Image 1: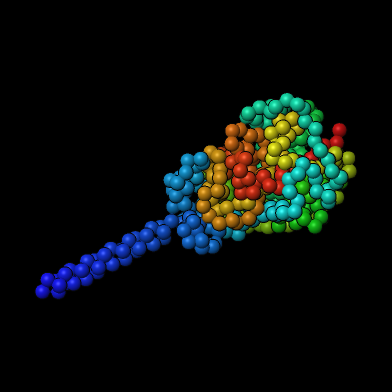
Image 2: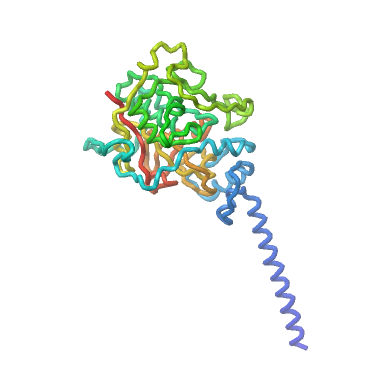
Length: 372
């Protein structure tokens, strides 16, 4: 009798325990489903479409599991996934062209930079050193175009000409010419490219001046209008949904800006050398000569950056991107993005340094020196 009662109690206990385990599994799966698709990647490894439909849950998750940086809303939920992908269209640098302090063979002969013997400061911001160069504070907008590689390169060229001229040159170098006229194998206009090829073009062919869309600045202004692709109708630009035009870059051999007085042929600015800077020399390079470009692998949490020192927390890889580095500090690089000033920290981002975060150091940093 006792044995029979024990068997019944044991069976009941097993059944109740089974129900408890089943309930816990159900709750766990339900909790996963409450997370955004891209946050669930850290559990399941699922490859989801790059979108922001559940970004509030992803933002909450990022801010809960770490304190290095703060995530927040930069884009509306209904931002077109194709548009997001187009923003990160830089090409991935070749794995066999590592940062070794020299340029690749397809650019020019080996070149080594000579720095002064002084140690660079622990923290540096180019905007504070070269205050007579307003371009250093400018935040670009690449628009609906995978042209970050050209925009970041043109902005670095602009800064360096201004710095070398002791502030006398205050025009902007045309990112649009690089986008539309660079016909090398790795220049594909709004479909992506490599910064080092943009610098090669600058050295070999020269680049004219050109401000942003709608300006009368320079010979060849940018041809894609900025819009509020971040804060919806609350932004200072028109909502991106208000227009749906696609501009295909077309190379011109005359100044599209008819009010610009300098002839096209006389407006060209040439580079002296295009070269890579290895991570170990970056502080000296920035402090002594000025900005560089940095390419890195973009993960789905990067568009949510608001402040702090960014590092990858969650989400799959969605592409590569190029930005301009203008400074550094303890554990970070200070960079300007090209998604206008409504993104991130007023258009800026601090990127974790010293750990090859998102492969941002292994291929070196690209730049060029202007001809005297």
